[in-house]
Image (cartoon, rainbow, N blue to C red; front, side, top):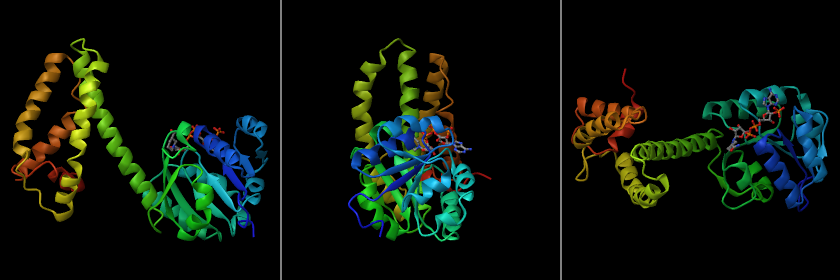
Length: 294
Ligand code: FVH
């Protein structure tokens, strides 16, 4: 049984920035690591660190019971694995490539059709964080694969299994990234405002960080409103926010900066008021996003 050792062999397909970090971490953890990449030269540094370099995809797959794949997108995953034929059967395919829930579900079915088991993974970290507990990796798909591979996977970072539906890892991954981009977008807009008056971004950030932390503390309350479907508020109504947004946009004009990041939020709030939800709180926006304007 190839799993019946402390450090089972692993194969890594794709040696971009992330794939290389994954392979390097498996090597450091003591796994016999076989790697393959389309551009063979990217394997040179890993070879020096002890990796076996496969000359074909099939050779990489054949080398290990667990095959991690981390490439550009799911189209590339299929392009690569479609070449492999029967060699996939009986192996655990751990796909750490970014994609959508539907792509993950289709890929899981495709892998199952070839007699292999599938675990999808969403990496919530940059390559430099891999191998630290700060790196969160979300998994979904075969629980059996997750349980079997967990001792190996936890070397990459904190491993969080979300359930048997393979679409869950990319769903949570993209949702968390949406929250991150929203926060970054808000910070970038705020910093552009501040810089237009020659104030140092660093000085502003000293105020922005605790402000955002205080605002983040209100998220569970908003989540509760969403879960029970009751958006009534004694905090801040859509109507009062609609009035406030006029000042935002006017200030952008005064300061000579773009309002591109702010106008979509303004439009959503205005739609809420127009649809009769003026007295609801901001959590109502979740429902408006779920029901796009026709
Ligand atoms: N880097 C990051 O911070 C993020 C963190 C969160 C997860 N993402 C996702 O990880 C996937 C890989 O990202 P990456 O950073 O490793 O990306 P690159 O360095 O650009 O490497 C891309 C690899 O994909 C291979 N590849 C591309 N097209 C093909 C193809 N047609 N056939 C075979 N392989 C292909 C590429 O090979 P090569 O160009 O070196 O020959 C690299 O191995 C990605 O889903 C992120 O969203 C990373």
